[in-house]
Image (cartoon, rainbow, N blue to C red; front, side):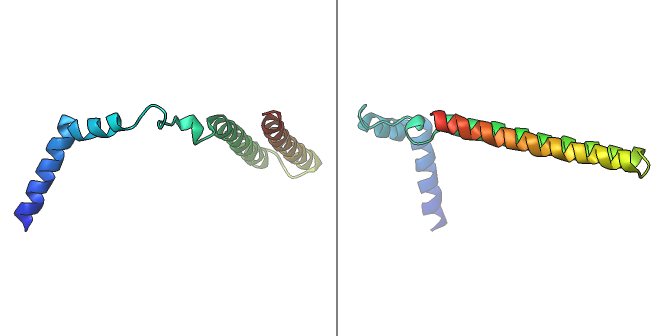
Amino acid sequence: MANMALLWLLRLSATLWTGSGVLRVTEAVSEAQRHRIEDWIHLEAIQLLVYHASAVITTLVLSALVVFVIQRLMREGPVRRLIILIDEIFVALLIVFFVGEAVFSFWRK
């Protein structure tokens, strides 16, 4: 039984190594039946989503870093709370901007 499986694997690897099995399959597909990846997946939409998602993540990481540094360096007081509030408002506005830009980009196309 193990010998049969080993022979089958050897025959399969020889067929794939020579490329004869793969060549026959690709020759059987006509030019009209071939599809590009762009026909199945909207690559521009994926690129746009990845760009905006990475921008939002970067914004959040930088904001967390600023708040961490401010909390460690400044004493408790109104200036510290004001800086943290300004940072939070800035992050919220940037996220709204990136979401709006993504929505308008999708709307135009």
